[in-house]
Length: 379
Image (cartoon, rainbow, N blue to C red):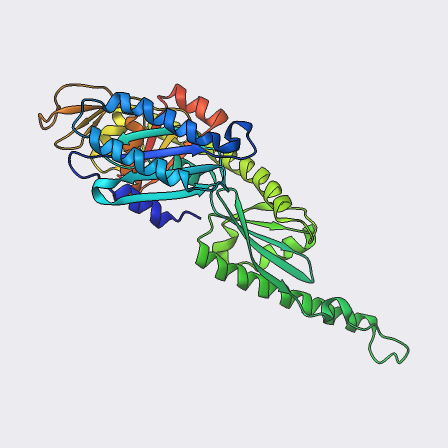
């Protein structure tokens, strides 16, 4: 799995002067006919030819060709397992990065001064890391789910006496009530143990949300035993049998995940637009958002899915503009055109310790009417 640390290192990477970084997102999904018999290799060559047309005649053309060759060689040795292959290459610095992700990302190749990581950041935001507990009164299974990959971590079984405590029998030495109390005590001990295991796992894997699966009575009891920090991370519960397969668990949680994310996005966009209208530490619209970003005031950047505005970037002070102008209005430096100025903004917010949120569907339509992008401000 791709870690947040790896993404931050990509954000920090800057190409050597006169060079660039080749960024590639390539669909290699073997369930699609176009990718069989290594059809994705032809797709990459086509992507690279398009980029080369833009690079021809520039000082970095030689470096781009070297990066292209490096990516093609890596692809020739590659055996697909996931849905999308992500590569970043800069031979001038001896830099090459390759990972698979199991989510759908749009095919694309780009040559620029930094790795183009906006698609990865959007995937991280949409597919937050989930901790999942499948439980009944006698056993538990713990999973993490991230970027459509599910991993089972623990098979925590309670003692056999939860299920196999002897009944009162003919000696009548213990009443049925005593036996039941003993069974209930063991079951509660089991639930407490699972709560502790989940807390330990959350510290290791940094969950964004938690889902409890199983019978309603058991998941409700376990939720009540969770520490406050974990209860705040609860996304919901789903009914599943203990013998559910990882794919069945993932499908059920992803359905809940989508509902949780869309609901969260609608509420957040509503709060953003209201706060911006009242001028309470929030703004909407590209130009004013970029201005606040330059001033270091953006705490959380919010933008609509599919919003990829062109703009400009000052080569001297780094100011981002919502349009291409020849000279920076602030330092008189030269402004270079940028195909996707929002991608630059996203990277800067993450690099400064802020957060980014891409919104979809209904929330995206509402935000597009307000300029497609906005931000909650630090001050």
